[in-house]
Amino acid sequence: MKENTFQYLDSLGGMDSNVSRVLAQYIAEEVKDKSNKVIDTSSWHEELVDYIPLQQNGWDCGMFMLKYIDFHSRGLSLSFSQEHMGYFRKRTAKEILRLRAD
Image 1 (cartoon, rainbow, N blue to C red):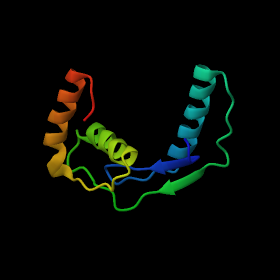
Image 2: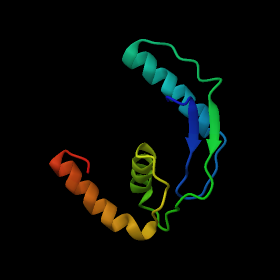
Image 3: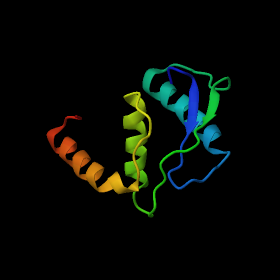
């Protein structure tokens, strides 16, 4: 939100042109509901991110989403793959149980 940018990352490699529009509406409604402020997302940029790690199964989409967010928030390149999901799943469970992210 700080950069007024929507990034589209689909761990299955798909592309849906409606996602940004729906996301913009959701963000505007959430901001209004939570802080009673009106924001205009019509001038926000849409950034298509190429060459992202892709999942190789039908059940790791949530973990991929968490890792995209985690790596982005730390300023890291998305340098992980399907092979790392078992480790990330265990680590995330441990962090949740300890209520602390490492």
